Length: 464
Ligand code: ARG
Image (cartoon, rainbow, N blue to C red; front, side, top):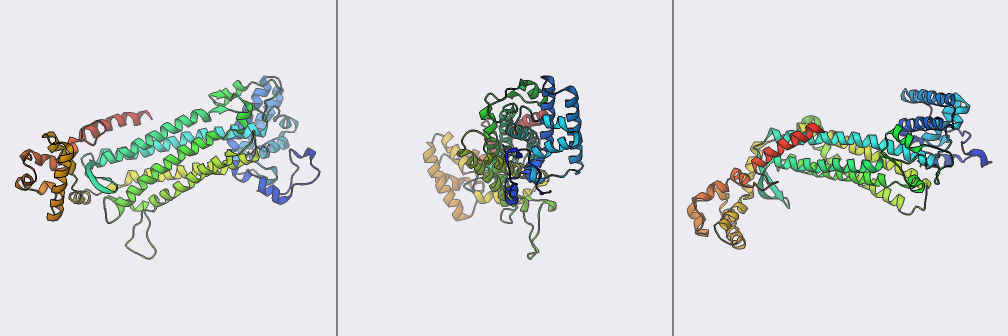
């Protein structure tokens, strides 16, 4: 990056040079140069449109297209010198174009402003990133589906308040996360609709007197619609807030999954074995195998929430229309994209390779008296009001704790001393498998539900 002061494209009315510290302070090219491809695509469409409506000669347009293509090539070959003195990606490319092709290059900026240009670039860039992140979400969903499909019979304790609650299928637990990531994809698809609207042609803020054809540009660039109000178009960044909201929820879901896995990987739970390749060791304690991938993901969620808050704060006091504050949108957006991308990719790979430890999970089941609700439901079906049944089973549970037994280990005589309605037919219901099998309400953990859902999801995944 070079920073020797260059004549500014806007320098006409200035007598003195920009102070070096101001140049550093106002420049964004260090981070917005990642928009170069979309900036060039946008300029190509703009130049085509200008020629189509007669503002540029065919020959001028061709020179511009050639110049831009050669610049694109050089940037991609890492053969392009970005100049801090030229502020941002837009002016760097435009100035280089004029250097390469002369006068036609200076005509490209007709009927446009950096204000509508930057809004267009960011929307195109974000559109592509949304598509990439959606594909990563599908990878994550696929990993979760595989986990559910591989161990369809595995029963584990389900928790509320982090207290053992009722037995559930491992697969049911995995598919709970599948649902979260499914909604995340839907949310991104919804945000994308509002991202995919063309601001170009709004010019600085008021539109332009040149006879431009915005619909032609929209079509060239794959935009669904053109913005309806030029003032809104150059100053709106709510599409970024919406994306950051969707990104934050993805991080919430990744962070919750991380927390589950961290617990399961602890020696206290011992429910999963993480692949060595996804853990790190301790420099002092040789026995450690730490779930750092999960911890970092949980930690990185904070960065993304921070960017969401930053963006809301940047916008809240802005008078209409464009203000330079808006340049602060980019680092927040870019870092959120990078963070979500790497977190999703690494977590999807880890979930794919994680292995449950059925023996350990099984050993933990009796600790929870997990079938107490089943016993209460049994008494309720026999005619006892549920509240009374709850009370009776509460006393049975206290007995079990005192006598260090699980419910299924009690004798019928013991059970009957607590309530005469209890018969031999209670025993199948007190097993974990029996309990799981009984949860047949739609969306419940019964095995048949899981098998049906796996089929539905296999179809969903095939389509995405
Ligand atoms: N780099 C600026 C941004 O990101 C581009 C628009 C600047 N417009 C202006 N009139 N200074 O927002």
